[in-house]
Image (tube, rainbow, N blue to C red; front, side, top):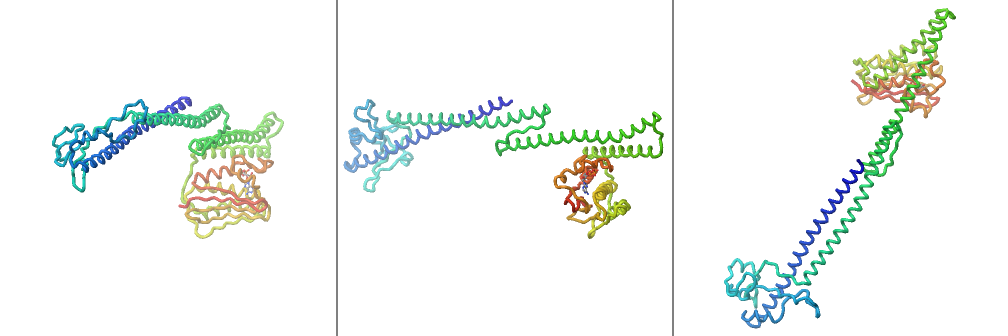
Length: 455
Ligand code: ADP
């Protein structure tokens, strides 16, 4: 494909340059010859007028003009040099009419003693002596024959034009080859990289050689390949995380059940409770994964209805008051001014805010504070969950919304943390057309902010 593109581009360059050069050659040739002839004609005519006028001034008549003119050649722009093998130039001739419009010097279509019609006299050039019109030089539009030297001059001019044209074509071709190679090189690199990606080598980069459309294409390709590689890495990581998170509770459940089946353990309420807890954990994990996959597919069912924000916050706070008291943490709701209602699925929002408050409770020491705040903000509603807990390190912060991300790896599963809570919160907020973000200072606390469209 790249070869044929090269050939096509080269052919196009060649065709354009040849057409351009041919047009320049033809027009310059035509113009040069026409202007050259016009110049010669004018010069010859001026010379003729000067000599004819001088003749009339002396003789006061046109009689004998023809013979007189034959004695001294009139105008010769390129006189033959002595010893020149070329013929002496033919004398350019003009027809002349006297003041009565009778032809006294014949040339071209005009015959001696013919009467010239007034319209042709008008087109001619009047000859005047002492302010009196004494005759008219008649214009003959046929081209006078060129002298050999003049012909040679024109041939040389034409040769120069042709050489210049060939030079221009060669340069155009050279530039064409260079441009074509540059263009197709980037395309070839992209093709190779795309084929490699197709074979599973996702991390491909092509050099960005320019800032034009091809450069932008290369940049977009590099971004796409990096994104694909990252997504692939995330997918693998997620599969490994899911397998790992499922294995522990399953191992506990099957261990207990096997021992009970073999008669090694009796099913006491405490053992059944342990099995039940692990089964619950599995159930939550599977529910969370399902929520995420629905959100990914844009099919998360939302039971949207008008929701009063203060009521929502009070409901979340009430659900966690007991635990907060147990941990000696102050849990408070702050609603600034009048916050408009929002169109949302209240259960999903309770899930999101509940998750944020649970995290806050988990990472805030006794004596700390968790605030659930709401505020209207330019046609939107801003919800915040602020804690005065341990905070999140700047290096961790960009990752906390990723699936299965746990800043403290050692805590996994011990306290029922799946590492999916914030990923689900993000998916639910985005399904509502909102955004969620986090700010944190180590040792100071963390603030989660959710912006939702009002109404
Ligand atoms: P988990 O189920 O493990 O809590 P999340 O997705 O809810 O998973 O949170 C991801 C990680 O973000 C947590 O493991 C924790 O390290 C960090 N994190 C979340 N909320 C807070 C908070 N309020 N204070 C400090 N760290 C937090």
